[in-house]
Image 1 (cartoon, rainbow, N blue to C red):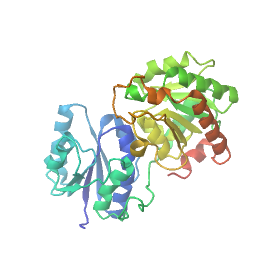
Image 2: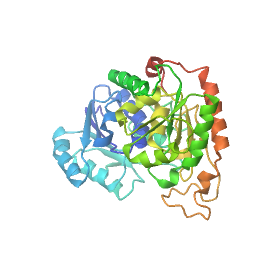
Image 3: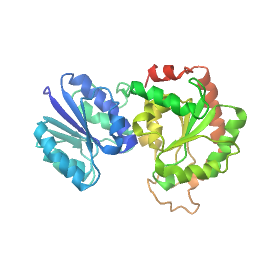
Length: 363
């Protein structure tokens, strides 16, 4: 295998998918230590990618056709000798082709005709393969030292490190809600991009009330600015002053923020993958999607599901006779008991200080 000097990784979105691609970056850095590696990513996620170890350049892309068109001359001028398209869509395939790179690698089952633009196509043996392992198939195809079968692949490395200033920012944000460094708190993500992924607000509220009563830690809502409405629906049903950081934190701050939490309770969402990557235990609620493909990666997490024949349907619209049966069938009692069990398990083994969280071992 050639000793590539200029490598471009195309993985523009979304939050969870970007986290899933981090072990592939780690494999590339190990195999090509002298190479300059660039990552093409949508502007909104660039801050997170900037915190990935082993990366030399982050190339943010502005939204819309004009943003993608504007980046092409820069890509061509860079003279990449290896381009990896982990997105597998028409737009990313075309960008790989327009790069002028002689070696363009992507998935054989890429969508929207993207494989047409690759010089090398990597087969995916099964659709029920976790995204982390699927992306690492590309690394294996490049001879990065990954094992020859999925079962014997070495443990992935999520080399995601907060900036030094992130710790101070997190301390200040939590301090506004009366928490000192080391105080136990539970991150709660009550929204998701798909409406079909959202556990009912009243169910979240019931669990949070019980968390308060049991004094398992201070629950704090996290999320993007456009999740205010869902968060408010939860807050109005909680019998306590529920803190929230909705819209306050940026994607780049998530590793430090979630690294300081005792636990994350969440729907199938982007923060779930960040928490798993930094070693924070996750209790995740899955309905229309498959934890085999996109569940929290690694040991120590709990995924709760309610089995119905149509799940996973991978649909943003529920067509079941009982609306969202796959989610509403997960009882608040079950979720609370799972959270309680995780907290009791972790409280004796996880470091209590914010500094220990940020500097401790990662998956």
